Length: 163
Image (cartoon, rainbow, N blue to C red):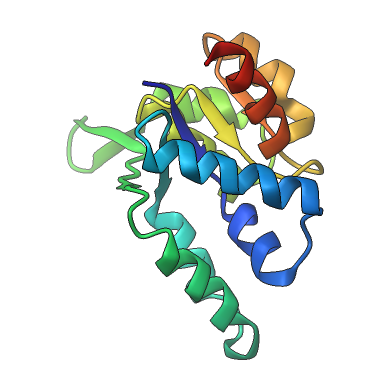
C-alpha cells in the first residue's frame, strides 16, 4: 500500500479556509482512501508541536482538525543517527538523509518534515507549500529514489491513474 505524509500546512490551510474547494474535495477523497486502507496517511509529532506554537486565538480550528485526523499515525523523527565517541566529548552524527536534505531545502522545519517522511518509508509528501517545498520537488525526486512532493490534487490525479 502506498504511504503518504501530510504536511502541517494541510491542517493550517484547512483551519484558515485557505484551500480551494477543489483541494478540499481532493483531501476528502484522500481521507476516504486512507479509511478504506487504499492509502496509508501519516504525519509526525512535529505537526503537533507546530500547532502548539500557534497563538491561542487562532489555534482552536487547527487542534480540531488535528484531532479529527487522530487515526492518521504519528511517526517518530530522529535526526541524529548515532553518537561517535572520539575521546572526551561524544560527537552526535547526523543522519545522511538529513544532511543531503540540507542541500535542497533551506527551511529547517520543512527539512524535518520531509526527512521524517523519507525515513518512515513514505512515497509521497502531501503539501500546499509552493514557496518552500513544492518548488524543490524535482530535486527531491532525483535525490531520494523517486520520492514525490505533491499537492493534494496532484497526488489524487496520480493515484486515480494507479488505482
